Image 1 (spheres, rainbow, N blue to C red):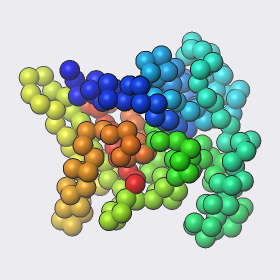
Image 2 (cartoon, rainbow, N blue to C red):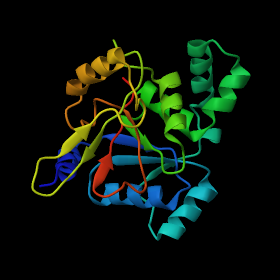
Image 3 (cartoon, helix red, strand yellow):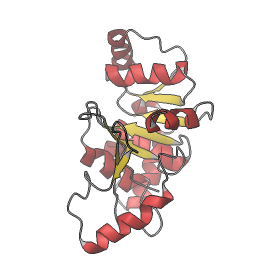
Image 4 (cartoon, rainbow, N blue to C red):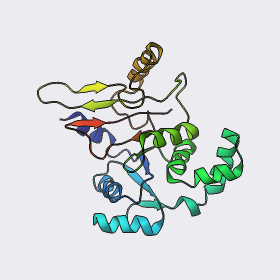
Length: 215
């Protein structure tokens, strides 16, 4: 069994709630429908209703069993705005401009416990995803920065795990040591250990990038 297939089997039936901020992307919507069909996770799509439905039509999928949330009108918005303003010591106006954005709203859901994790990066840059997670969820205890790993599956040999080739591609000796020490705390891809993952829509060759970030 491929290592990525083993991740899916470990996740199947656990009922983990995974927030997907790019709900207006047909690829993400199709993935959400597949997660439900295969009982891998409970997806939560974020985005304006009309855009999410348009993406569903483009993908040719039914979202009847998928939770869809528009951050701009969700009942938790004001609570999240105040929480972010207090945590980051910024004005409510600035907090509102940020938290209304799906990336920030989604990571606030993870920080609040309303979601167990999230996946983003189809239409957003890695920098934007990591920044939103860092400002809302924060780093794990003892970690000074976010870091990542990716897994490359090759024929006739064990998978190779690279850390870090995306977020800190040229680490200092101290940063490299920290990355090495924190990797064993996240064996494989545990759905509960690293709540926010950037993703790549077109990984080269057989590479499966699974960057990890916060908490």
